[in-house]
Length: 352
Image 1: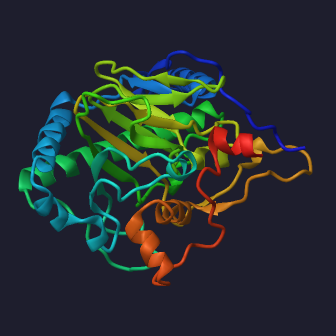
Image 2: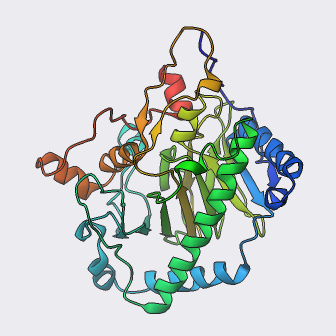
């Protein structure tokens, strides 16, 4: 038989805190100690606070300042960078452009947010449809510098975490990073509108799992909620100098369900809120399948192998309005082996 999925997380009431400072040690035994803490947190919740990351406050403050400046512009100015005008899925995302599967199922109105998506020039998320592309960035030079500096810092932190997760899973430390040369990892700048009379049903972002291996999130205010193993939505308060990390679809797949992607949402945002998720991926053409270490006997895994970039592309095409329109017109096609939304995490376990 195949190694059994971890069918649920614990009934946690708060997220664990993991200090990864020892992952930067030259001593392998130190790195393994930090990795063991990663493993424990992921198996318990699939979500955790990250401290000891080494990202400087100045870098974070520059990003926050320039993001506020960008979103304070009028809508006409922001729409000059509309994501539908780009050829590599970068740019401004107005309210209502993005819709998760959970909206239609639960009859939820459009998310009360706007965003700006940042990715590499090439290979971009749209590499299947265009060979060359340039990332669309705001015209303001200080904004460009702040965004690019933060993006590079997140790429570096992602590499450290990929090594840490490999050790946590008792794999060779370079298991993931050997496929980490030019990933289509994405940084998202999100602005949630202030809504003093917000109700529990008001959606900042609908319930979903993230498509990539893991996400490094920097939030500025409460609003994030995580689904625990008892089916309860748990609020995630801000902890100073901590990022929030969550497991995504690809990590669930490669571990054959040993690590489960956790459903999460943003609800009842009363105050203006910004959030900066960095979606950590491996190289576009990386084949992602359950590793042999997580399979036993003759029964195959219940997970199908996927091409990393194709999975990210397919999920994005099913979420963004401009891509769904292009899909309906036959201008683009879903990649082979495309998974439907909610194919991973707790939702898929319940359906299966």
